[in-house]
Image 1 (tube, rainbow, N blue to C red):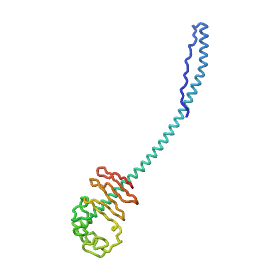
Image 2: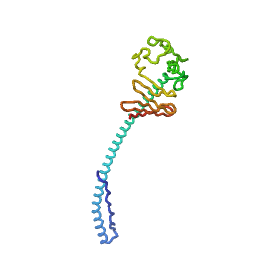
Image 3: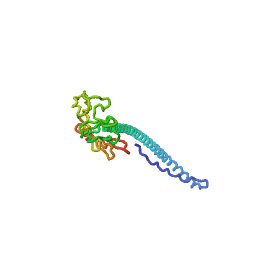
Image 4: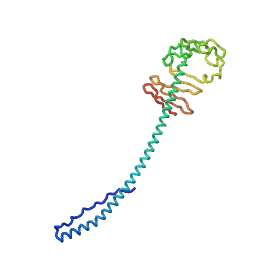
Length: 251
């Protein structure tokens, strides 16, 4: 890149001859002034060359600055695009986390787990939903909430009069007890355990067990399950109790 230089200093001209000067003084001043003017031509040429060089240097630097600005703008556009992609991925992860939380909550409201006595609320302390079930460990029976009371008859389940030809109380503890093996594979593949406070502890589906951990306010803190030789752990974050994000780690 062309260097920027300082232009040469142009010397001032000597005093010009005056009409009042003696002939000798006039001639001396005139010769000195003429000689200075001749020398000044070289100074002007040097100053012009320096000005031209500085103009070239300034133009080169302007071109370089424009190129840098263009590159910076491209980088900014790339960063903006990547930020959009990251934001979209974060939104998707948050939505999936919300769906998982809603699924776990829905399952825990309908399958209340093992209880020694009939519950009066669901596992979250809300009103019981019609069709909710629990296994009474005192009576050794499955019981169904019909919307008003806990019942044991098969007919307590809306629209069901018998199970594989049998009616009456649900006294058998597995579907296999009713001669059902693969007719309801999805039901057989789902198993839920509960903590003492009624929250879901584990949810096993198709042989994969997900383990839930909770915050003090009852919201889900982490969900972890095996993925091959690793364990995937999803950690959820909240603002004022509302789910706002999720991070996942496999280790």
